Every structure is written in C-alpha cells, then in structure tokens.
Amino acid sequence: MSTPTPFQAYPTLNLLSSELQDLVRRNGRQVQAPPGTVLFDLGSSCTGFLLVLAGVVEVSRPHVDGRSILLYRLEAGDTCVLTLNCLFGEVAYEARAVVRDPVLAVQLPKGVFHRLVDESPEFRHTMLALLTRRLTRVVRLLEATAFVSVQQRLAGELLARGPVVPATHQELAAAVGSVREVVSRQLATWAHAGWVATDRGRVTVLDPGALEQVLEPLGGP
Image 1 (cartoon, helix red, strand yellow):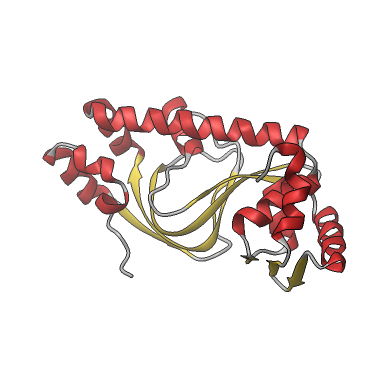
Image 2 (cartoon, rainbow, N blue to C red):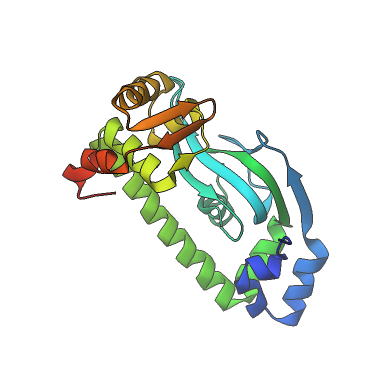
C-alpha cells in the first residue's frame, strides 16, 4: 500500500485556493523518524505543523515520579491538538511526542500554517473544530484517570486494542496512567487466571468476557 500524499491524508488541504495549495507544496519539508524519536518535549517551542502520512506517534504527559499518561496517538491524517495549541497560543509544549512506529510526515513552517489559517476560512474552521474535539477527549481521559481504577483502565485498553496487543508493560502503564510494576502485577494475576497470555512486548487477550466483567461497573468498554 502506497503512502498517501498530504492532500490525500488531509482532505481539508484540497479546499485551499490554488495559490495556498502551491504554498503547501513548495514549503512542506519531508520528515522521516524511526521508533523512539522524540518529536517534541515538555517546554519545547513549536517549529511547524506536522502532517502525518504514515506511522504512529504517541503523545504523553510525563510526571516527575516517573509515571506518564498517554494522551492520544497520531496516525496518518491525524492532527496534534497540542501543536495547534502551541501555534494558536504561541506557548510551549506541555507534553512529549515519541514515535512508536516509523513515521513519514511533512512539516509546514509556522508562518505557512498561520497564512493558511488567515486566508482560508475552511482550513481555520477545521483546525478549530479539531482542537475542540480533541480537547474534549483529553478531558474525558483525565476524568477516567482520576475516577476509574487502574484495573478497569487496563482491561479497557486491552479490549480496545486486542486480541493481540503489541505493547510492553511500560507502554501499557503509560497508556493507562500508571506505573509498570502495577500493570505487571495485574497482568500476572490475569495470566494466572487464564484471561491473558503475556510474552515479551505482547499481551494476548484469551478471555475477553472476563475483562468485560471488570468493566461492568462502567457500563462496558
């Protein structure tokens, strides 16, 4: 399967005037990043608007005690709400973005992004709508982290990504806002009960019904 162009992955770009579309083509810089690459970190400034064409980026908020919470993942066609926040508000990043699967992207300079926003009502409306929707999901995630148990968050994560979840215990801990030791103990308990099987860098859901029962107080996955 071929990698989409920016105009295929981000249909909103097709609504730009021919002049602005040419501006995107002339100024877009290709970005290739292997797994583990930090695309931005806490306190760093925003250098441009990233159009993800392939791969996966995980955006998380680390804590001084070593824990971190996964805020969201970016795949082809996704827009990073924290980048929008930085571009619109001229503020520094409040999270860390790390490449999980090899990324191919195109980055537009900050000045080009602002020109698209200023001159295209359709582009501006789309960006603001994306900002609103993603921020709503982040708020819901923070509510879940505050009021839902680690056991329930982990069960939900496995059911959402299963039956085979290619993730280390550390990555799962970041996804549910916990620490590796807690997640490892819970997975060991479930493995002993026959609900999951754990291998290096992978968890396989064997009994989804049992995990769904863990979620019953929440009304399901």
